[in-house]
Image 1 (spheres, helix red, strand yellow):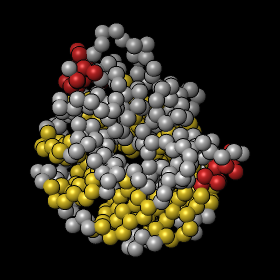
Image 2 (cartoon, helix red, strand yellow):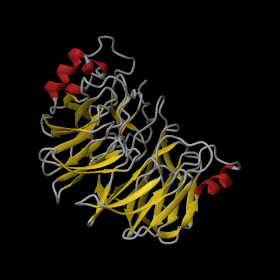
Image 3 (cartoon, rainbow, N blue to C red):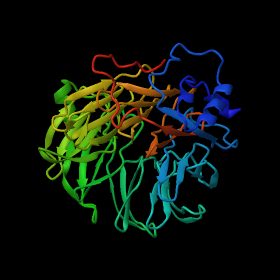
Amino acid sequence: MRAGRFLRLLGLGLGLLAPGLLACNSLQKRANADLPVWKKRPGGALSIAYTRDLVANSRAHGEPYERGQPGLDVQGRRVFVGSSDGGLYALSAPQGEVLWRFETLSFVQCRPHYDAEEDVVYFGSHDGALYRVHALDGALDWRLSTRSEIGREPIVRGELIYFANANDTLIAARRKSGEIVWTHHRSPAAGMEVAGYSGPALAFGRVYMGFSDGTATAFDPATGQEAWQPVDLATEAEEALGEPPKYLDVDTTPIGLTAAAGDMVVFGSYAGGVYALDAELGTLLWSNADVRGVSDLALFEEPAHVRGGIERPKRSLVIVSTGTSGLWALDPETGREVWRREVPRGGISGPAFVLGALLVNSSQLGTFLVSPVDGSLIDGIHTDLGVSGAPAAHGGRAFVLTNGGTLLALDVNAPGPYAVAPSHAPPEPFPY
């Protein structure tokens, strides 16, 4: 039974929280009787509200993981998530009922983009097409074929939608018709590449994207013209490392942020580290070559607040997820390491921000709630096959698709608005 493939959960402590109590008790009855050595959980902040098996039985073969990432319609209380069975699923967020399923010709690993104005969902498939379907019933509006897989979330701005495919091509299309307005393609450089590619980021009136030849570029969103010459981050990496990087790829979707130095865009190079470029000129502001295996970037921002009678200043961190060196937090002003969280096995997903904490997935372990202050572990749920795709969250509810093809709806009750372990206590290790 597919559901049984993930249910070696950290059972103790789930019953401490009222939300999802019945669901948790049910899971404990189905869990492995041999409790693992890490049975004492660091906190009872995560509980399971419900589970839904999503991968259709028709899936006869495929990759040994699910990279589907949930997308949310907060007002309509719906969840959209793709699967390796070729389907995009729409579910009711409160209870998990499947509302409809749309069939494509290959894996759907792209995070769907819900457009509230049009009440439609945009998503890509490994069949090389971008789709627009009605959020109400999954009816197809249009399908745009690009002949190469689309696994990064598309972005809507004005009347255009921007997306990238695995052939190092950035595409702008008309949102309502799917008509292509402009494209930009870069030929891959000679040499080795890792699997993956950047998606587009819109910030400061431009579109930014990285490419597998090791370059980062800015574009005019209306015309696709280069706003500055491509920046060769592979050369920057060679200077920092003292040798040419084995992998050239700049295949992480960049993020834009404003710091004391001004507007900047942060890119990730798999072998070369993390780079901040001036958003206007493309000049290098800072780099950190110690971060290896970059796969996702995110900006965590904590507003100024009062806690315990003490005024706390605004806090900003660049959160870096990697496939080889764990989870990092960098100072956006300098790129220096604030903290690093090693993971014993597998890669770490991009985070979802929930109740002031970071929810991340481990491809070989499970789902974990981490403090943004020092990277300490707040809570975790282990799954047999791990979780590869990034989670999604709103309020105290989060959604995760396991490698076994099961959607977990989690209730999160972080201990305090910005959870942190005592400064004298060493961080709890990720469970083995």
